[in-house]
Image (cartoon, rainbow, N blue to C red; front, side, top):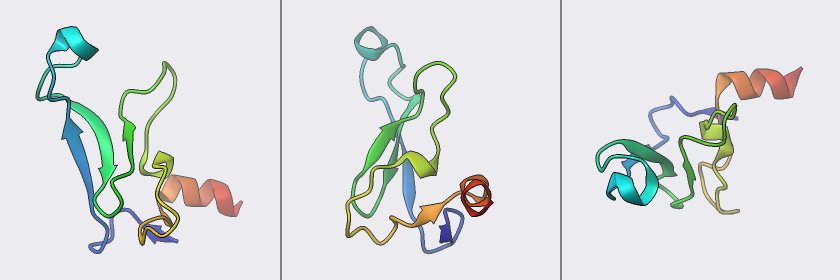
Length: 79
């Protein structure tokens, strides 16, 4: 597994880009976390009590960043 903090991994925090009346998020406020390799993205503010992380991205099967995880996820998986 690779860490999302490795220099070879590339992700973007994407702003809303729409008016607050459309989605409740201001134009410049972060809305999505996106993989720069395959374009997989997930909304940052998920349902109440749910935290979005690098581990939630639905990467394409052949994405070179598919195995990238957070330290927390790795520690929970390796238990």
